[in-house]
Image 1: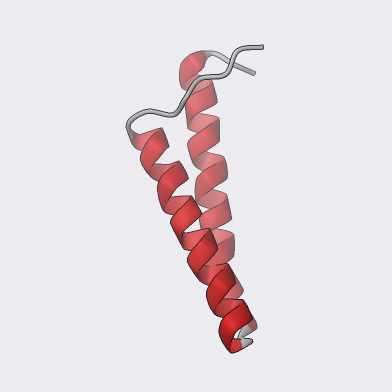
Image 2: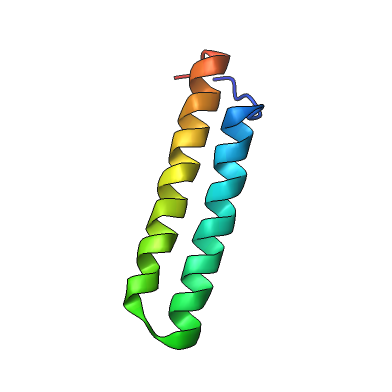
Length: 61
């Protein structure tokens, strides 16, 4: 099994996802507003999309 570090758009998706996930989660905990979890879930989805794109580019399963 080979892994490939994300590059280009995949790297952007992963980093943007991390930023959104952390911001949304921290905001939801700080102000106790569960609607901010939507931002976190979008961030998690972006991370998954970025890692899947990196895996597809590297030929990993």
